[in-house]
Image 1: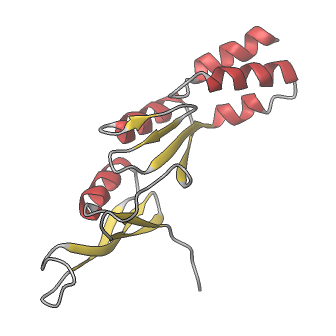
Image 2 (image 1 turned 90 degrees about the vertical axis):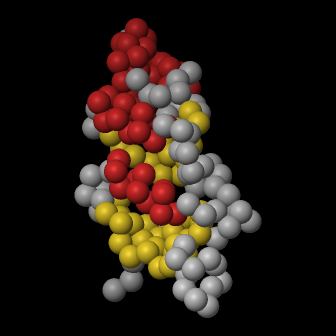
Length: 158
């Protein structure tokens, strides 16, 4: 049976990244890590490639060198049940990284994440166009998404 897994190209820090991510997400683990041997092509003992699982999803990674880097063209979206989850994932992944707008951030490895509360989807899809627009406008002015501020904006438009 076939499956699809993201494969991430790291410069030379796959093992560090796998440890960072598996410490953040539940149901996570580091799988096999293939290391360079006597025949190379890299330094003997250094990680060449490997797998790790984050909340039940398997990722593959390679230490491919500096030729390629991550961009916002690919991101991972985390659907959060509430503000507590938003804050946890935001604080954890933004540590050493870079905050952006509308719930986006880059972690310390340059991987882009969207930290999205379920309530955001509900509010921007509100059947009342004024409420939906107000929630959307509020979101556009945020870095981390704050549910209470979205709700207040939507309620003020009603």
